[in-house]
Length: 254
Ligand code: PGA
Picture 1 (cartoon, protein in one colour):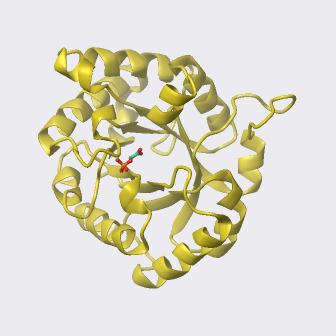
Picture 2: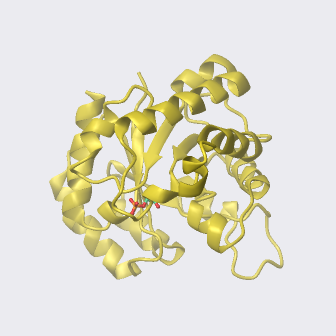
Picture 3: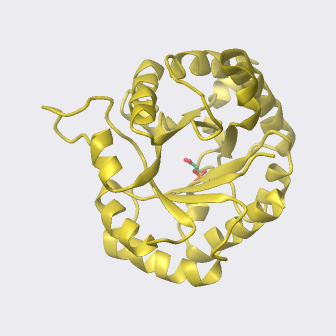
C-alpha cells in the first residue's frame, strides 16, 4: 500500500507573513496524525518562516525549484545545501511553468533530481503533455521521452527515493482536470516505465496527479489504482480548500 502525498505548490503567491497566517488557520483544521504525507511548497522567501511555523506538525516543507550546481556564481539560484539547512523534505523539479517560461530541459531536471537525492531530499519530478500533443495522440510518447530523460541517473533504492507528478499541461490552472480514467491510463504507463527502470521498488513509488485538482474532483482521482496523491496549485492557496483536500486524500488512503 502506497502512502499518498499531497503537496500544495503556491507558485509565486504569498509573502512570508501570509504563509504563516495560512498555516495558523490550517493546522487547527487537521489531525496531527495522518495516513498521508502533506507538504507545502511556498516561494523561497517564505521557506524559513513557514518551516518555523510548521514546527513538528504533520506538514513538511517543499521547495518549488533548486539549482543542480553545488554553489558558486549562479545569480538568483538556490542550492540543495540551502534547502537542506531549512529541512526541506521535497523539492519540485521540472514543473511545466519552469519548462515553458524558463527553458528548463529534461536533462537539467535529471541533474537537479540527482543532486537532491544525494542530499536526501525527495525530488518531485513533473512532466506532462500539451493539449496539442494529446490531440495528436502523442501523449504516451511525450510522457515516455520526458521520463527517460528526466530520470537519467536517478536512483530508487526505497519508496521515498522520488515522486513523479503527472501534470497534463492543458489541465494546469485551467479548471479542466483530466478525467480519472485519462489520468489512470497515463499513471499506469508511468508505473510500467518506473518498473522497467527501477524494478519492483517502482510498485512502492508515488505518482501524483496535478492539474485543477480541487475538493470536488479529488476523491474520484485518488480512487484510481495508480494515483497516489496530488500536486495542487489553486486549491492549495486557501486553508479551507487545502484542509478539505487533506481529508479527502487521507480517506483515499484509509
Ligand atoms: P492547478 O496547478 O492545481 O492550479 O491546476 C497545479 C500545478 O501547477 O502544479
